[in-house]
Amino acid sequence: MPRPHPLPIDPLAEAKRQWLAHGWTDAADGMSLVTSVMRAQQLLLARVDAALRPFALSFARFEVLRLLAFSRTGVLPLSSVVARLQVHATSVSSTADRLVRDGLIIRHRDPHDGRAALLELTEAGRELVERATTALNGEVFADPGIDDADAADLVAIVARMRKAAGDFADPRPQPDPL
Image 1 (tube, helix red, strand yellow):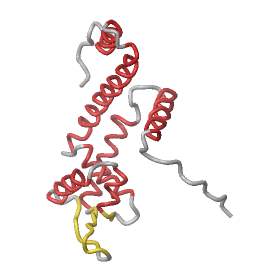
Image 2: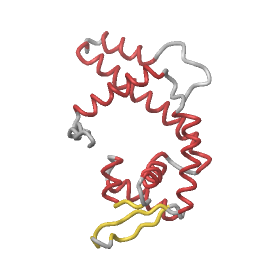
Image 3: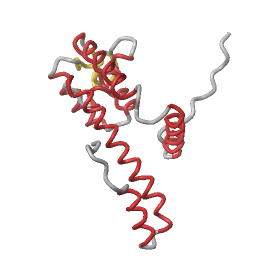
Image 4: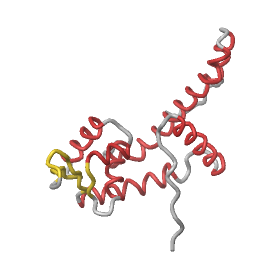
């Protein structure tokens, strides 16, 4: 939600000033961090939504399509999609229902496990996700709004935070190739 006219002050800096003025000194930096990251997420999501709007895709729908397109066969178990996108199974299932309705994926039973569902990318889904990816790359990802060095630093900082929260573990060392 970028503003057509910037505010005369940074409301997040004012919030920190208020936190300090109210004696919440120990929490002021954390409040500033959390609200800053949340505002940055709003700004980035607004750009992503604008880029995907012509394709009638939400970012959640795009992520499922892109994940399926990255797979070797265009088919993944629903449980793998849930794990890789790190969202609740109900959310992925609901997103998949909409993608099935729109003819972008097919949902069918896993022949090896009748209780599990497989999601399969259709040709229409593959074509759409390629066009949407081109738009996202050009309109958002190629220029996220900060320079490359700051972007790399920010990704590293957030990765440390995510790892400390249990989001992922370092991969095991791989042997050198023969």
